[in-house]
Length: 298
Ligand code: KIV
Image (cartoon, rainbow, N blue to C red; front, top):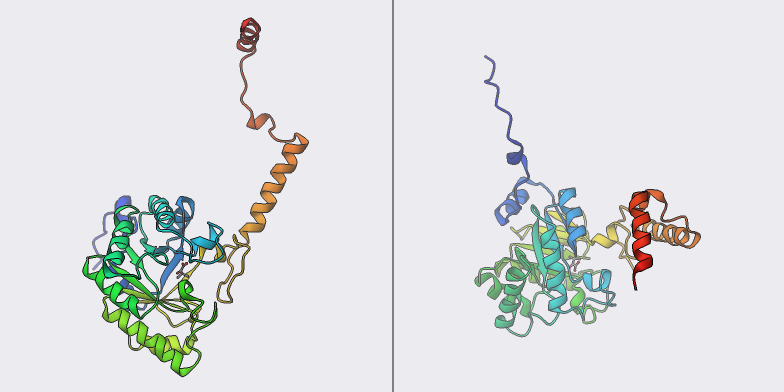
């Protein structure tokens, strides 16, 4: 017996559903890899939306990639909020996570909650991310208890890179790997809905994941994590600063951008731009009258 033909699904019902915490957890359960990328403004968020990513992070890597600081440490809350609000305007579907900048959450639970609330209220973020285990575990717990979802971040935590001995892989000795595992397990127990693993050996990441139920998003943590995150400017080759070993390039946009602006500059200097096709015209009679009127102007 043939099945009753289904009526076509109305177009608006086919639009992708906004990403939610239960859908992220479901993706992990089903073994569907989670795609996360950073974005820092309206156009980069629109690109992430059009590319169908699951999660967008307004990372404090913006300090270097878009604001020109040499580390993530100096970026301020107001700078991050402006970038996050712009990214929000470019997104409908992915979950938007705001990175709490260095100095905006460590001192007390009250400070952590107040800063997290600003990312939700002023920038429209769905969740926030903070770095490290240690005292950050309690800050994560406090933010979660205030009703705001929190993503943790362990391994290489750039806000405290100096204390970690620089921007290098973490957890490469048994003792240090236990430290990373302890942080991750504590962040999960504090209520984090997901944890970023940055720059740790793949085998260490895989072993820690056996102890975790929440989705783990890796960056330089090997192929076993539940998802991957890359920095927008690294993956598209927009940024000419140092790119870490784990940052695979899927484009060389900076070279194209420089070539485009250089060609524009050359055409302006030679007079080739603007040509007729980029120029507005006026009817001859109107021009004649205008010239006559102009001559009479004082
Ligand atoms: O700031 C950032 O971009 C990040 C990602 C690398 C996870 O924290």
